[in-house]
Length: 100
Image (cartoon, rainbow, N blue to C red):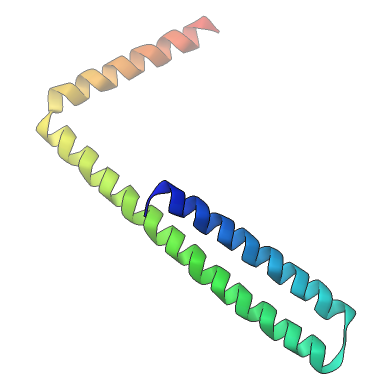
């Protein structure tokens, strides 16, 4: 999944949650069979939102794992480069802290 589809997925989840909220508000105003049907629809929408969030979480976990493995491979292939990079970042942080 690319960034656009994740943004779209997050928007879809927000929309589903808004729909569920509206359905629950309607169910609170009605009674009897109609209220039960609205609650059922809200429960369905919540299940859909949970499924979509699961998809989003899975994608994030997979990308994080891939980045972690790529970083680990790079550090093992370039140990002195990693040391130099760490020293450079530490130096920059030291400069920023010393400015305050």
